[in-house]
Length: 439
Image 1 (cartoon, rainbow, N blue to C red):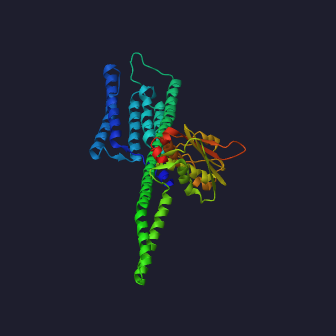
Image 2: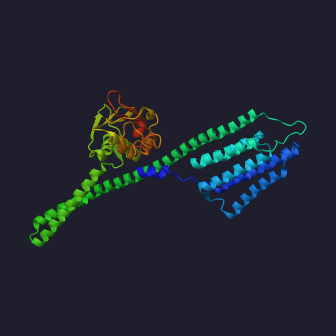
Image 3: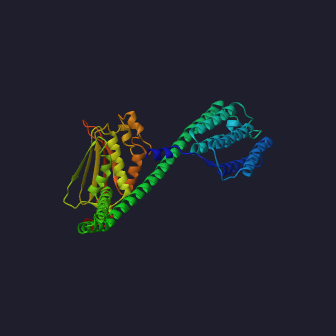
């Protein structure tokens, strides 16, 4: 599980060249339209030549990139950040000739930084944000007059320009941080769900192999018994020592094969039919791998008036319950308790340990991907991963089967974590063959 988590926690972030080029073409077109409207429609005195030179340089750069490279290729983050930096510098140049921060388009400094926050690492986003702030700060002091009516020039007070500069600074910081946080959470959730699907696929393969092994043991048992009986009877009637020795060898090897198949059948624990299991069998399969780690695991089943629940052999349930048990064993000091009971409406499994418990500030966040800090956990426990991707996967898989999973701590003065898993009985048994399985 730790390997799966590490593979998904460090995703490489790439953005297609075509995406950047489309944004740059859109920006160039919008800049040309703005220059035309201000110069021709509003008849303001705009320095058209330098503005058009800047836009033309941007268009030529786009054209060169489109010809030299495959637009569908994905750029390294540093190259994508370089193109976004060009956008900031180009915008700064245009604003220098058109009024600086007095120009309402100065808020477009936010766009490249916001794009970076959604697709690039945070260090590059911070660098682009600093570049945008530096350009805005320079434009506060150095810029040509805002294109306006020469008979009634617009003069903005310095305090207003300081407010514009400050609002640009805050917009870049707050909006980019928010966009980065939302995008990062969505990316982590997507990666964790992908890891969940991988784990579920693996568990399904293991369950299929387990069922095949049990079926093979069941089917091969009869012919091996026949071979064993016939060889034993022939051994009694044959008087030739050489032939009798060979028959004895056949009988011993047949018995050995029967013993091996018996062990396979016990390890599978699936019984007959092989695709169903009782609740007690489910719990025993989940508990069995964790009995030899020096932790006392107590299992209690409350016998109810209704029959014991029988469900389809579900890898998601087996993995989910097993992972929660594994966490309990990891953090327990001496004892882990597994209590289960049922009635006609619900089925409940409660796993509790006598470990340090869950930190109060983490209690409401348990089940989120990559959450791994637990109160009182030492460095060795943290190195094992704690409550991280494994609990997220377990909770996700269990909830897909209709379960409600909740995490609490034992009431004071006791200590330890308590995990409660509750299914509607109808949902738990909906894929089981019911009476046939009970028979």
